[in-house]
Amino acid sequence: MDFIKKINEVVSSKEEIINSWLHMKQKEVSVPFYTSVDLRVSSNKIAAVDTNIFPAGFNNLSEPFIDRASDLIKDYREKDKKLKIKKVLIIPEFHTRNPFYWDNVLALIRILEKSGLEVKIGLIQNDPYFEYEFKSSSETTVLAQTIQRSNNKVFVPGFYPDLVLINNDFSDSSPEILKGLSQSVVPPTEVGWHSRKKNIHFEFYNKLVEEFSELVSLDPSFFSLTTKLVEDINFDIIEDRERLADLSDKMISKLRRFFNIKDPSLFIKNNTGTYGMAVMQIDKGADILDLNRDGRKKMKVSKGGHLLKNVIIQEGIETIYSNKEPVYYLINCNVAGGFYRINDSRNSYQNLNTKGMYFKCLCLKNECSNCNEFFNPALEVVSKIGSLATGYEIEYLLKKNQSSDESSIKALL
Image (cartoon, rainbow, N blue to C red):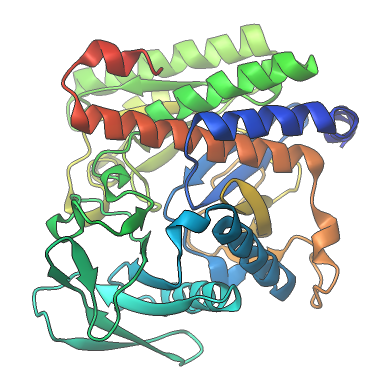
């Protein structure tokens, strides 16, 4: 805890400088409407290990955080009055078998309605006149209708939105019905996992970390996340596994030698989203070579049955909270709230985002009336850096979709 206490002291003492820097960065790039950031805190590092541009899990926020998120949306509307947002159409995932996801949608509706917005749910389906009913885990019914399109606007019967809010990561493609709309679409559908790449995100994240660290005179290794892209991997081919194992051993050696990590561990992840699939933790390259048939099968397929092709090797970070890690939710790069992800079947080195996880408020109390007091200055700043990185990532992907000039794209990195 001495490390995080030290970082908090530095961040608190330089709050004005940091806020000025964050404000300047937000002017440089359009940050996503909302993000969620998974944070890991060890005895010598605080890092944003995953940032979601289409976050679910709003149902895990306490009432004070629901209110705070609503207030931030009010601020967003007031600062950008030219948008004149009054009606919002949420485009969710099509999860018929996951009632907890619909708890998330219900919480999102509450947040938006508390901010004074009218909200409907629209689905991208073939039948243009079909209505759906989904049940949340609390047995609350969520009503949704198939969206329709007229010229350059989408709508559901009797409801023309000013803003289309995407809560669907579009792993396969950006849907045609949402392209070229005159309405605002946030976040852009072009940055779903069909085009998003983890290695690109962490390039932007680590560059921002370097800039921030120089600003506050701290070592960037306190916040960075060592990440390497490995392309064209087939876990059934021994030569590919050998290549991946060799690169993993080199990263382990680097973490020991240059970052003084005694027992480093690594994660091998799908480069285009995980969803708990195609993720493995290793302590040495031989762990990859020793994969049995079931292990190789697990690392071959991602969401939707797509064959995994590219992976990242990423530094693992132990959590000082035993089997907990904080998850922060941001609206327009401002922290709205958060919770702990907890997994009693896992230890401090392991991935907690697996079967058996559950969630508790940051204050870890049953009544969360004062949970706004439990924010951590250092974690807030790192979560904002994670959210900022997605802004640069979105800009990169949009320009990449519009241009074939690779040199102009690389200039962004």
